[in-house]
Length: 228
Image (cartoon, helix red, strand yellow):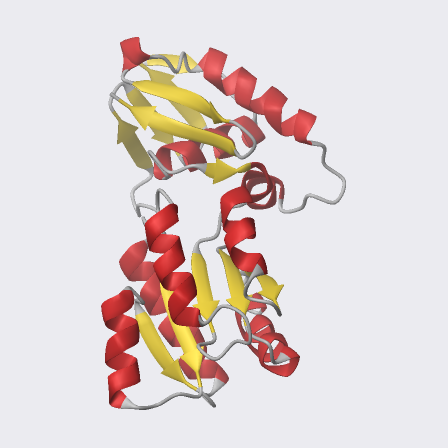
């Protein structure tokens, strides 16, 4: 599951793309006004941005420029637009877009292009049962983890949350992103629940510089796991 922001002033286009990607288990967040996205990017985590070029406030190209200038890590970007001039395609790619899709396009092609960008730009889960990060060893099948060969008892949610942090090393993850990814919902979940789980894995896994990792609070945003 990936969290995808879709920016377009055409509601029908947003609905179409959202349906295509939701059927593939992605979470889609719509933005009819592009000027709302920069603020959202400062508050929340997205795995991919799908941007229309022609917007009445900020254009897709302007959003790409803003994101690359102001965010510590810019999500991958797909331009989804009716503009088809070769110079426009080159300009978007040179500005930092990862792909360019000309409207209208079929559902199967949009889905394939999105998955291709996500494969290229995100850390894919290892096929191996065992994942090793310094002194930490995660057994995905048994949801078990060891630290310096000593077992650490984690609940299922604690295990999923810990793996998510290690898979996104150095990347700030918003509270909403963490809750949607681990708990699959934020409707009935308080941030207190998340904070308690973070506190527990920080203590149980002894996430401090002595072990090469430190789980930091990002004020007003969420958390980030750093390595030393």
